[in-house]
Image 1: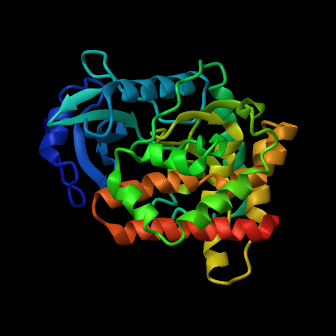
Image 2 (image 1 turned 180 degrees about the horizontal axis):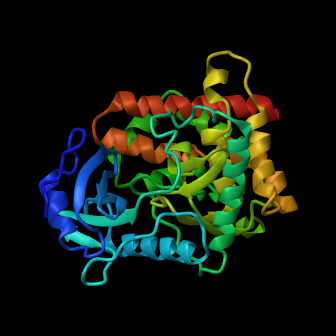
Length: 353
């Protein structure tokens, strides 16, 4: 194998990439590392070979179980069979999609098609064009439809970063959160010592009263959701989504919750609102219109959407807060908590509840 030209600061060293590549007969000769990256959950490396560009993703066994990763691979393969634009996974010489090396589990994907134009953008920054927003909404609906014939999965437990919508159905919200964090004392201590904790519970309780039938969550259509439909996970050609990546937070949940997460993350003007600037409110309506151009919301889903928008990130931010508290980063935990409180307070004023 020829010497691999290193790229930016190496999250994945050339020597490691070379050892992994030797186990994949369909890669060709590796030429260069194009980009290395680390995140809270994974290592990533974009690299070029004689046959094209590929992406290597590594996850620690302490964070993800092999069975979970293989389930994700099956979902990706199902999407590819339905011609949904997500990068296919390569199999190694043993015909397996998951490879263990140097203490990590590794997956190699074909590089995503199109332009990674938002790779350095904030999660909450707006799209550049409303046409992109519309395409993002329509593509999310196609994602849901492509997975509609897969059987239900058990909801993921509350660990790591998780996209789920379980607290909205809790009989006693305080007791439910205490149960979720029973084995995570740094996060629970942070919350109960926060002067705003009881206020947040009251706000969430008040907002979730707008769900059409609190006794039956299945009034909202459930299915496999993406859970992280943010700009950094979407690639574009012109103003159309050309590829979708990273289903790591895929879960079984209300489909309209996934739309609410997408709107709240990438099509709602939180930065403008927090800065006291006039918000560009059209983005949220355009994303919903894009979604409904492919999959029409049911009356119950349409009625629930404002409540979902107001409450969808509560559990998500609790998970992020718990991770920060467990690292001892109380400033980061406070940042997540203050952001969530700002959202709840803003929605209370907007919905008048």
